[in-house]
Image (cartoon, rainbow, N blue to C red; front, top):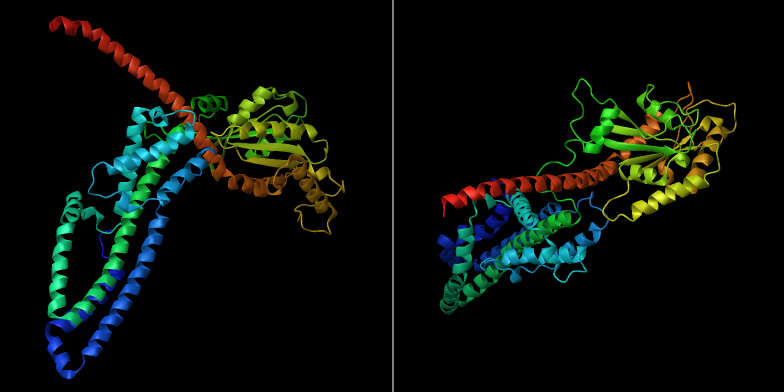
Length: 512
């Protein structure tokens, strides 16, 4: 920030105005007129007003710094929640007096202590967990934490772009000498003018208290942010999310998605997707309307309608492009009862969102609950990944009682409409049977000529889950990029080592 904060300037002026206006020429006149008490009262009034304004601005500055503080990444896996709690506890316990600026390597020691906390959390079985930190990643953590702290400092601290390290060092070096001179001045002033000295001392203490508190707030914030930045990247590392490159993990498709895009005939006039697509998996029993749902989402025929068993024998990807979703792959599947558990588990692990399709007129849902429970148990056991959001689509609502009535739209809160009451009862029962929040259960009709509630309620619900799905996609892509990065680094290192070894005999012969 290049401009002066007018409120801080106003606070400073309130301290200075009485002395600038009265002391130079008016002290004698005040004495002759008997107005010294008025002068003393004005000093007290302006001092109290300036102190109050200063405290108000200090609170606003603290609130602004708190708003700029580093926050945990919502895309972190569940295991990272406890690690961030350790970082926050360490940051809140920082005492600026323990980390003076004039002592070398203190910030390095603070970073080391933060790394030790996170390393111990992720490797409690190791005596020296910090030694589990890879050297390139250790350097990367310090580099990125310092970069982020620099950006926060320049964006939120006035005149920080003009503050030099030398100025800070000189200020701390001359501080004891300046305090001794100030003590001599105070003693001499007390001898020559006791009343003025006592008043000046009280005013100075009040002013110093305000500015000292503001300075300590700033330094404490810097130390806390340093701890949070280092802790943030340490969690990124130990949770498997920190890559050595600055590439956005979702900027380009992974190898698996590239193959699926080719299968989905993804080549278009635009040259194909620029980033990793969102992977949406459609599951459910046979003849519940999975393929019909995909067709309804596309607005045109894409998937073979599964009226005959085994029409879709494997996961079939389709590229979905609609408003609100840049690029997505939606996967049609055979009936969950005909899909091997390993294939089902692998497909769910690679998905960013799951749509479970269940028929409203089929109350036998025990097998569906067992399949979903198995998936939820497996996903809950993975502390390095967050489970994909689950949406349940209730199909065949047109077959509910009264059977011959079909006059949408239906208001499910209308207790006078029997069809609406039947649909609401089916939604409530299915949410309880599958143990899914009722807000995530969307009733639709997919019958030819009767398509209902797909483009409005269902699509809106899918868009609302997009943020969660994108966080799942980010973790999935980071896992894939990390494996890819490890292989690429190993390949380059082996190639460079081979070239070095081939050149080594020639070097030794030239340098006997």
